[in-house]
Amino acid sequence: MKEAKERTIFDNYYSKERFEAARDSLWENYQYGNMLQNCEIESPEDFSDNEIFVEMDFVSNIEWEEFQMDFKNFLINRTLVCTGSVGLWSGRFEGGNLIQDFNDMRKLWTDCDYIHIFDINGHLYVKCSHHDGTNFFELRELNQKGLDLYARHNWVDVTWSDRRLYETLFKNPYSVLPNYVHLIWGRKRCEYEKAA
Image 1 (cartoon, rainbow, N blue to C red):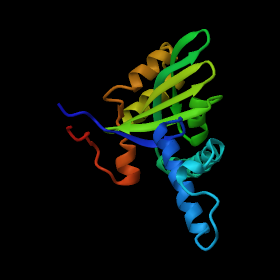
Image 2 (cartoon, rainbow, N blue to C red):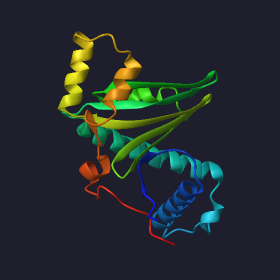
Image 3 (cartoon, one colour):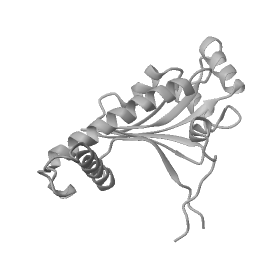
């Protein structure tokens, strides 16, 4: 059976792969910058963990700037509906929200240290962690029916709870998959892991 491929859009969680990539980057830059000098560092293993973590942070900041620019462009003429849960010291709490600009998006990871944004076959997910727990959300793009329902709820039909509204907006026929990786990066809508 085919397994859908997780396509990372942004990720600053620690991983051994990111650590080793930062070490390799430091080594490549060190070799390039010191080709004509006597090198004090003889191999990638000679870099301290602190030097590697600084490099990881540097790369993460560049990737974050690129993500922000891409996502702001993605949100032009789009409204997303978000549902998910927030992990707090007092338990998990479910909820939803509309995302119309990047400031709305930031609310998903307020007070979080680590953020992972990824696409799986057009589904857009946000996972973010803080000292009390982990938040997890899925986002979908509202279509015209969804925008109309939202407008009706806000101005006419206020009998629905916000939770019911967001759960309804999240389903067909009110929203569609955002297909972020396809629209922004030009990748296939669906990708699968290669069989072992």
